[in-house]
Length: 66
Image (tube, rainbow, N blue to C red):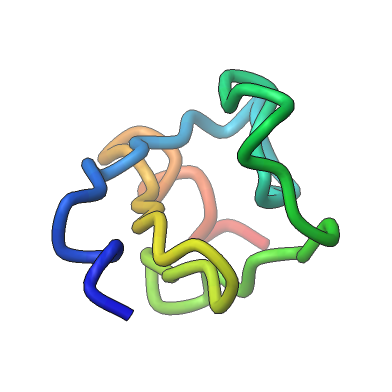
């Protein structure tokens, strides 16, 4: 699926965790089953729509204390 190539990166803040796709900003017509994203490496790509998610620098800094 080439749709992933056209997707922008969604930068997530700590207060937006845990992260799911589709996210609240996505239009209803483009929704798919809700998927929890594994951001242990600081980034993840939705297996359905290809949207790329990345933790902000602040969220990454805060995650090391857990």
